Figure 1 (cartoon, rainbow, N blue to C red):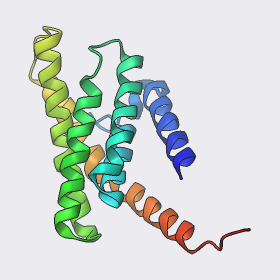
Figure 2: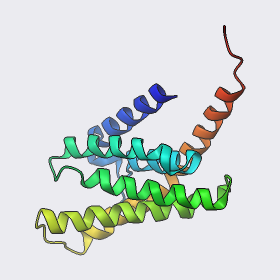
Figure 3: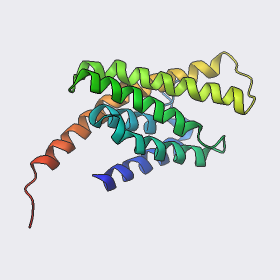
Figure 4: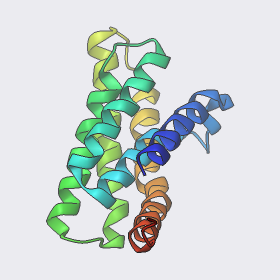
Length: 165
């Protein structure tokens, strides 16, 4: 499961960076790494998603040329909040996946926008916060649902697989 997770994270990072325009839908650009981390946090909880959030954030940080650690910190906070909400729910309550993912995405987008303003001194026009936060919310709310379903199915299939040996 760890190798599959690492492969999924590297593939998501590559696709996110390689697709022209980030495969924008309307004015929203999907953040595949955010969606994966939010889904992992929803399925496995905050402790398990923490490592994936740090790794995914560092992959984004190293490939983006910005301030090192911004994406990692933003993903860790998003994963922690979503995982905490899942822990408070006690089990997978699928209708809560969408608002939990949206909240995680909003936190991620807000932290990235704040970091752009503070660390890089970028002037924030009215479109930038809406694009970053809107894209993060859309990714967290919409894309995390199929990823969470996939991870749950994988987790169950691995749990029932007979041991060899």
